[in-house]
Length: 332
Image (cartoon, rainbow, N blue to C red; front, top):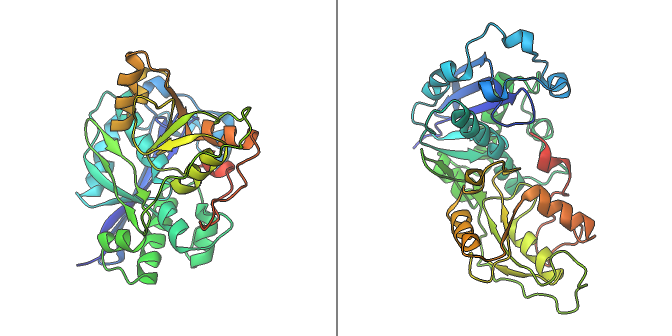
């Protein structure tokens, strides 16, 4: 076996993840970067506008892409670089989510691929105050000269994956996945699942705290999570809910009142935006039958925790999670 994959990164023109204006990639064969590439492009027409603040981050403006091909015209070049290999990104929930949404805006079917996340793996293997790309690079000695340049960020993600694989003596992406107790995300033309961690030991669901404050937003709610969370382990999220007097379940049932969607989900403008996982589809079926089930993003969940003053409490015997803050809304 050998460590073969493609790392990629995208930059967006505005807060809509589908507004891709740049993409970069780095092909790794046998633990070595053998090819790199990048391009600028016009974002898909429905989201073709540049937010001035976003432009200050990556330096790309409308005038830079005005005469470039559109994302729809260049996406075959990006997907061609993948070559059927596993795809890796730092905060893959964002980059793969951007890929999905840009395809949707261009009315192009989603591609089929498997993907991993160096942000997820870094959280498993490293002990850092933050897992943003520059901080992980600095810790591992990975050069990052032009953060938010899509090509540079893709190369950095590739080198992070290589460094982590060396750390755990993994000679393939599958071995790295096993060593980090994670699972690859999957994308198909009609559905997707996120790259997420799984626990080395069995997880028992915590019981609701009977002495919790009834004014807490989670008190009396039955909460289910679907997709990977970016800022904490799922078992931490379970304990926060239970401590606040809520009931946690692993699957959507007739008693579910709140479904939290992870994997980078941020907002929905149509019902289809919500139906991203089997649990979400099941929840919507219950909703259609009259069950009062509400759909939340991870940002909604963290804001409710923070507002209830429970976000800083840790579940007994669990690692300290990343503090819910700008990691949730940041690209890393």
